[in-house]
Length: 116
Image (cartoon, rainbow, N blue to C red; front, side):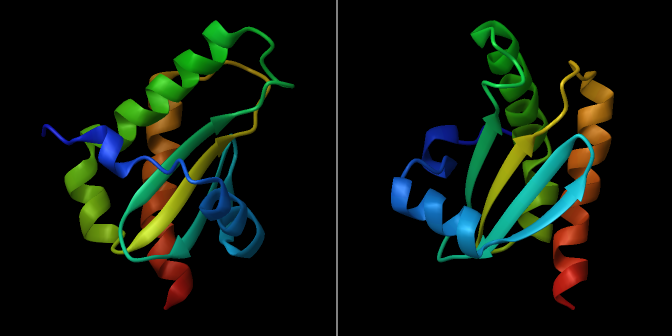
């Protein structure tokens, strides 16, 4: 599915601060997801500079996270409506694509379970 990615990315600093301070977090190692209700779906992907000093490594992990999110966008839209979410990678090791995919899909499906 061809999704206009830039339209869905969270870039506003106030919104990012609000998300990390007031948002609900769910952890499934090596990814933490922060979520908060909002008017439209926005997403943020983050990898710490302390964990991966080389930008190449950080960017590869962020590319993998984005790829998983947008390749499964139909599933994401069904599970998450009107939420701003952030995916934060917290491990010191480089992940495989399948590991990330399993954890991200599990976290996406568990967001709505916690609210019920």
